[in-house]
Length: 194
Image: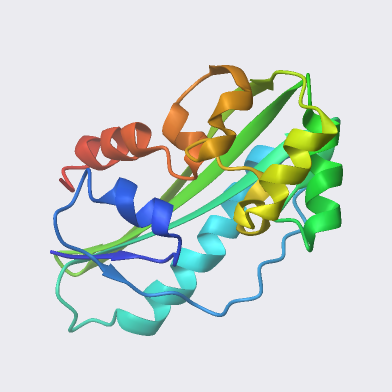
């Protein structure tokens, strides 16, 4: 079976290796927009856009059995969606806002399947609550200077040096990294796709 990750994220690539030894990376240039307003529905809709675009491009009735996996992650705090910061200033603002507080991380996953000549797809989302210790201006500034926050929703990577500011998490750790690998595995196994 051909397995495709519809994401260029190095973190998702590493986590998918825990399920499949071999897979391809194919990304789409689809416009990531949705009218959804609820955080779980936002990430499901965006993950579906990515996976569906790749699936539509590569699968036809003559294709081998194929799975396309798309994912999207957002940070949600105080009714506001925090995506990747546009610049260092926005990264500082996000981290200052999240300091000493609890926020939610949502990852939506959409999986499109072509198996035995039939097409199917399903989506789900996973929520993890993350609480930060108080982070002073110096620590925020030093972290932002590393450049790490600029390609991450909410302006931080729980798996990098920012880990020292995380007081606790409630939910799947890998979901905060950007790919809820345990839930993905359970969903694939339930459908006999692993």
